[in-house]
Length: 258
Ligand code: NAD
Image 1 (cartoon, rainbow, N blue to C red):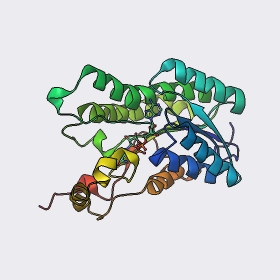
Image 2 (tube, helix red, strand yellow):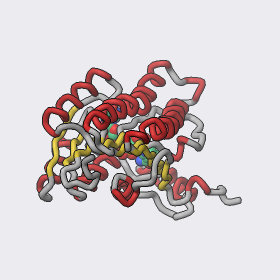
Image 3 (cartoon, protein in one colour):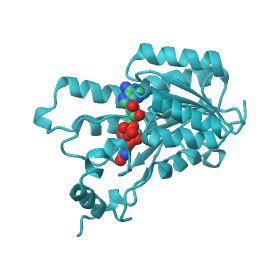
């Protein structure tokens, strides 16, 4: 089987034109992987990410696809296969949320959020795993979930349900794909400074209230999450599978001042 640490490992990062996905793409480029920078809306930003990787001596491509569309995911993997042979590393990072009180959540909002956050991860994981098994690659799949795969978040039901489902996707695929040498791990960020949190970050009162809840006393950075992903796809993490590693400054263990 090809060496997992070969220089030419190919990685796909979904939703990589901003935030955590952008930082992960840059980190995997730094680790000398060929990086496919997936984006849905934000082609210019994705091109900037790819340009930054190539400027540093790496290799990167952009690829547009709505991960909630089976047809678009199939076309994206066809393109990766024909150019790079297939992926060795998949980072399911694309995610959205549409906060609303439970009594007001619409069917369309549920379908959109669960479609991107959970179905998207399923579609990409299946396409990646099929290629890994066919090529005999000891691949890695990283699912970027959230502390909310375990913690309730009132007013964000579709999101927490998608992330909770992602936790079981991680666990089930880890067991089912282990005989093929494929590891599947989750990464569960707490509060990280990215565009998904713009509303909170731009409001001094909301930001202070959130920071107060974090035992580490600060909001995390996308680069901190990216370095964790870099470790999880390295040989040093070869025995880690089927679990989620939380990166939250202690937020999940916060006692709320008790
Ligand atoms: P972000 O909004 O910058 O990143 C989300 C990315 O997903 C964007 O680039 C967006 O274009 C992309 N995307 C949206 N719909 C898509 C689709 N249909 N197909 C492909 N890409 C699509 O925010 P982020 O914080 O970097 O989020 C990245 C991941 O981290 C998400 O899964 C999010 O749930 C998770 N997360 C973030 C935090 C946080 O505090 N920032 C905490 C926990 C989990």
